[in-house]
Length: 191
Image 1 (tube, helix red, strand yellow):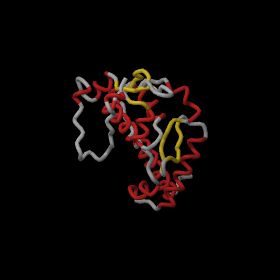
Image 2 (tube, helix red, strand yellow):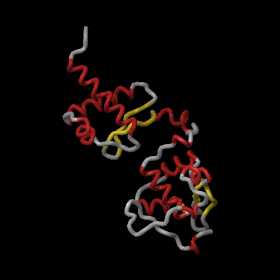
Image 3 (cartoon, one colour):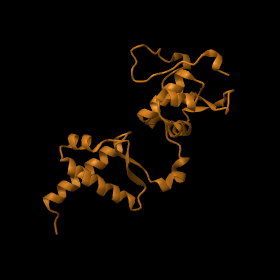
Image 4 (tube, helix red, strand yellow):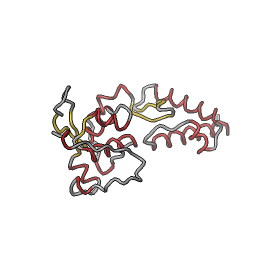
């Protein structure tokens, strides 16, 4: 029996959703997906739910609801299996959160996780872990204060990927840079 035209349209929607979510480095809302693809919101929501169930049935990927949208991710039970995998630096893609965190570290290094989180306004432990795993940042000792938090700084890989000879080659921050608030630390705070 041949699939009906209705089934073909549903299959096409599912494939398009899968491709868009695979490409996106951050969660995408149902409304945004429906608008982009030109499908009714209810159909897109239904297709996303079915896709989520499909991936939950033993696949290496999962479809998660995250930050008010949908995002493709590795299956949670494979965390240990994929955790040590080294990404080819030339193909490295970073989320907006990772780039934001990396910029804060680059302009304020050495800097602690609580200082990064104060600037970003959100928890950053997972983003920092990702940057450490990718080799873009490294531990630079501990700050001499209560709790002795770990200090982070960028690596030579960071310099290579961004075409810099030294951290001093970073472009200056101007008053017009509104994408990210970077707070310079007082010199006496550095170890």
